[in-house]
Length: 282
Image 1: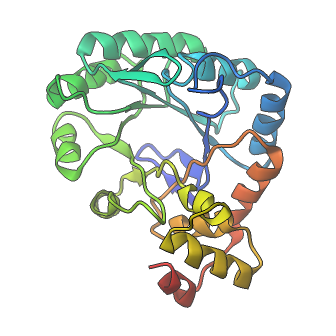
Image 2: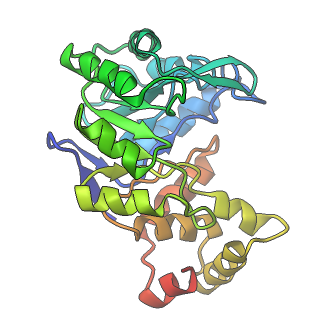
């Protein structure tokens, strides 16, 4: 399913890896307990051509970033590490927003240290803080970019108007919203990103997979399971192939702690859905 090219010419293959699950459980708090397992997953991801790893300072309160650095640094030349700031983790499942310029700077500088880099490839606002004007938050990110601490700026969990506001301040290279077969509330954002040539990174891409494997099944999950049987594929692969078919700017970032599941996810790049298949999932 090809690749996506950012404005400066760097490309990523259109199946990334989300690292949120490789933290302490429950509540994504603290370090992931099985470093050897994480190492196997990361190495296999690189072997399969995955070259976009997505994390956040709030994943494990920095431990996800530290794990990536420990297991992957020095980083392959073509590997893009994306992280996020603006959410602060204070305990298992305890998360609050802080989009203040001071926190964005503090978080960015902490991530630079955790990731062992001088410049963050893609730095994303994790969520808009309703108590801080978006212009102030994005302005802080723009200054960090001017200082060379950020190479590209992205947004998460935003609407079209918020993207427009941010783009008046700094170039926006990516948007990361929840989007999958069962959650299409961000359709307008996905369409806007397509028109403006902005990468769209759908988080939670396998919600449909959870429906397909459990009960009760949502309508999309039921249709997904039937189509998967017809194609001889796993439901999750069909769900990811459907996402890839939504546009060349769509770069899913499924996460997993299993090499087998990782291989299944990446193989979805080779699953072509027909117009009839797509219509069945519409």
